[in-house]
Image 1 (spheres, each protein chain N blue to C red):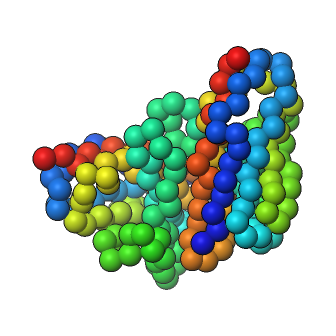
Image 2: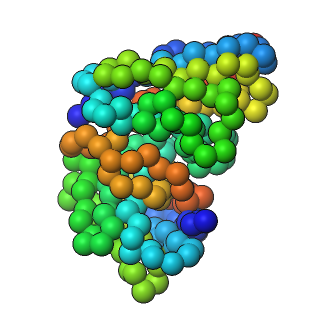
Length: 118
Length: 109
């Protein structure tokens, strides 16, 4: 069964960038489509974007367009979320989850806490 | 973008009772691309219902989903102590984005 392990907690200054990784166990990582979602403290879930299987097509929430990028390194079985120009309100737990754009998500990473503080 | 509104925000019930959680969409959700997730404190969400009414693998039969179009319901037939957590609905497959409801917290009365 596929499992996702995410990178550790990050503390960043406002205006900086952060890169969070999501490592998949098992084979055929290039066949996985992946989403990134975040959850601010005490708040709900917010979809950020998605990378498709195979051709690595990406689609981002309009809220984060221009400030986010999602990439994949197949040789390392990792996907990455990079968020630029961090603001205090970007403080949240960031999750990766497996699924196509038109499917529900069975498998989630454990989450990565990103704290933006001066 | 499809906005999902969950009600109530908090539901107070006792173990053994029946819970009915609502999720209303601002526009029709195509092909019943509606899921429900359960989230326990400090954990990632867990899929419990997909396709509006299909139970995910390993989910107890007391959980059921129904609805289509703009109105969806998650029902928990007999509440167990471990069910008193937060539930989110999600619509997937529509443009421009995937969206979640704001969540319903189930608390012990």
